Amino acid sequence: MQIVRKILKAGALYFALVFGAGFALGPIRILWAVPRFGARMAELMETPIMLVVIIVAARWIVRRLALPSTSSNRLGMGCVALALLLVAEFTLVLWLRGMSLSEYFASRDPVSGTVYYVMLGVFALVPLFVVRR
Image 1 (cartoon, one colour):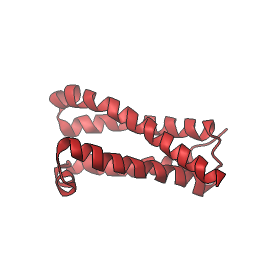
Image 2 (cartoon, helix red, strand yellow):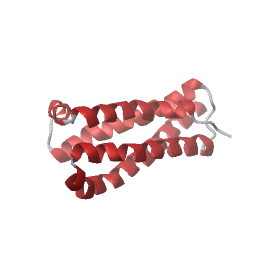
Image 3 (cartoon, one colour):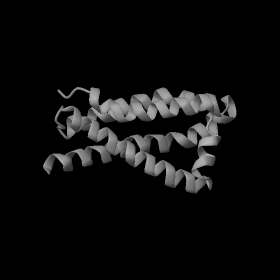
Image 4 (cartoon, helix red, strand yellow):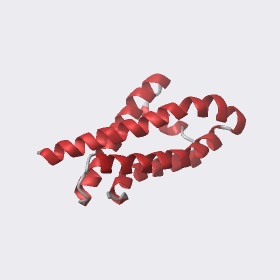
């Protein structure tokens, strides 16, 4: 039971850090990068920044919470964080934009949307590969 609590805490913290960074970068992307470079390029420019945030957040949480290095623990952390991220995305974002789920998927750019979906998988899997010293 203690390890489940630790996994849930790690996943929630991982979600909060990465979602918070994405939430902070959103206005910069929308107000500065999109008018200059277009929506696709702005989203693609944000991707490497978010990758760094994901790696740093996963490493810090695994170390800070001393999450055991078993695959199930680390994958559990990533899956909890991914589930929270999808709930936030599909409730908050869709509600703010006034879109249905099908409208949301149809509105995604084919290139940057695909990169985003790949990054969701990366987000879930990175805790599996970070090393705790």
